[in-house]
Length: 109
Image (tube, rainbow, N blue to C red; front, side, top):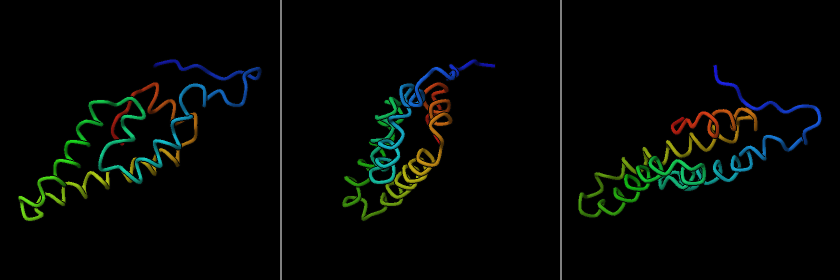
C-alpha cells in the first residue's frame, strides 16, 4: 500500500492546497465549461489525455460541415465526459482530490 504525506497538527490548514488541491476549482470549472476541449486535463498535467479530448472535440466540430453533422455526437460525448469530471473534481474534498488526481495520477473519472 502506498504511503501519502499526512498533515500533522503543526501544519497549516492549507496543507492539501500546497499539495495540489489549489487546482481543483479551476480544473472543475474548466471541465464543466470547456470539457470538450480537455482544458481541465492540461491544468492537472494530463497532457496525453488533454490532447485526445482536444483532438476529438475540436476535430469533430471542424469536420461536422463535411459530414453533415454526423460528428456532433462525438463532441457531445466528450463534452459530457468533461462535465462529469468537472463535477467530480468539485465534489471531492481537497484531500481526496490530491490523493486521486495528483498522487495516484488517475486521468479518467
